Image 1 (spheres, one colour):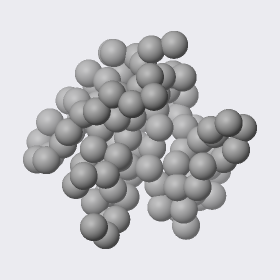
Image 2: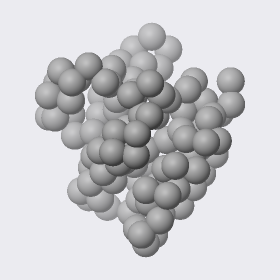
Image 3: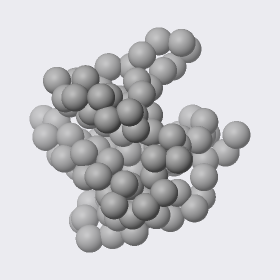
Length: 109
């Protein structure tokens, strides 16, 4: 499955004012890098991958909108997956893009 190009366009709109954003196709998805780090991605499996501070992951999972991101059946620490159903509005998407962006910007170089 290819990534959702409509979702990618919406992410671009959210990041339009952020200097230094780069896009990179990766693993069937489209990653959006901020400060040289992946912040969010339009996943090749559908939905949105979001970089999160591992200390915040449990709090974010309680919302029910996100689930642990899994690769080869294992949860990946510091990443959540949000299904498209939870990204319908601009506000919903903006929340997750902001979380991913803030997390990527805090990672030391």
